[in-house]
Length: 169
Image (cartoon, rainbow, N blue to C red; front, side, top):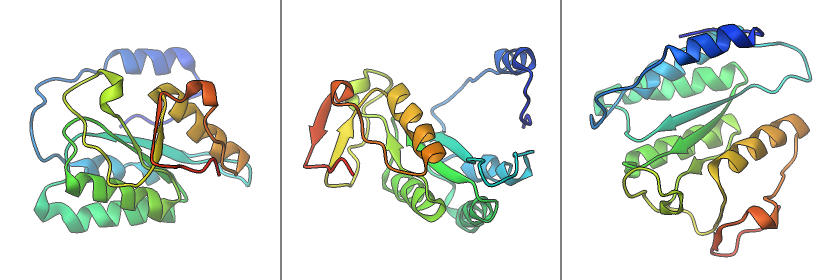
């Protein structure tokens, strides 16, 4: 865990030291990461937006369900909104957990689709309608919505495809 910093050089150096390897393990322990969120030195005040992106491709271990639930509730208690990002490998349990975490904390469930061309095949979400945009655009919209306090629909020029009949509200 690395706390927030205003020093961009320190941030870049810390990020540059991170690595990922192995992969392919299933399930994982996302609750361990979520448990760290309330421990960070978040800014305080009425005009502060607290949000975290949780990127995952595998659910929590079955025996860790209670810890997962508690990590989400602790995130809510710390007034942090979760924006889960579902990647390839997602199953029904991960989608349910991510969608529940977003709903409970006031965030939004985000997901990769096969339109991305990245990773293995992606699970089609169990929702009736949605817009598909590039992930970077979706993340920027999520931050903008938190800062503005209202819904911001995608720019029509950014929509790759539409599933169902989503409302722009």
